[in-house]
Image (tube, rainbow, N blue to C red; front, side, top):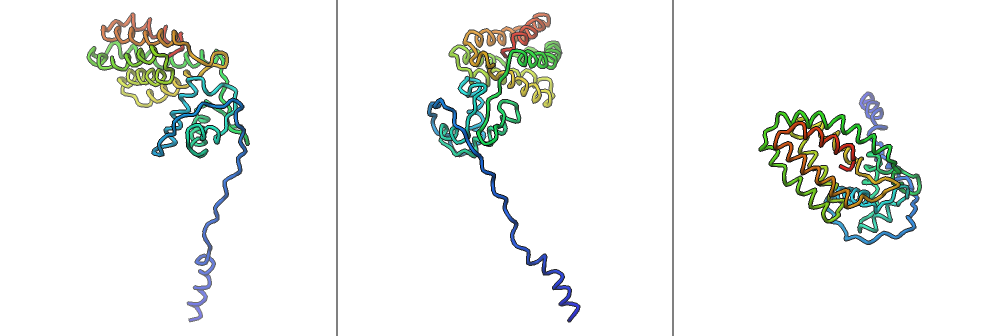
Length: 248
């Protein structure tokens, strides 16, 4: 009996331990951008974070989020009709991608990029994508390239109306589809991340001109025509020019 009581007492400190203590969330001060943002239609609650992330990416491309400016999560949340939490989570993802930086107790500052960074991105993209496209030009049957025509047409349609956000998505979708034919998912993922970074606005030119979008979209069409024709020389010329332009 005494031995049993001793064992029970030895276990008592563990058995009587209380519930785990929750660490309170740190207070976050916020700074609202001085210029009021145009109201947007509230998003649906399903996959709110993903929808907000897409909306913020579109706002970056459109130049609505100005390089160098600081935006608070509550202010952006009010714009989209949601709480600050999904906005803050989406902004944290954009910070990981390098689109914004966290400003403690204030919010998020949109990254300021110059032409030099854009040129570096174009160079890295060319090193990755050009050899792959040239290999695919020699090996992929024309029928596979013909299947990509709707994607090329989508870039033209978005450029024609000057829809920068839609163009950015269509542009990356076309490049992803081309590279996917190489059968290397890691290649597609890395190239798409570099491509997305190249679409963020420059501090000196926050909005891409409609004429530049049209010129870039026409290169997609010309490239697809050359791939269908299996004209490797023309493909090589077009892809190098495409990345030199650095628009898409």
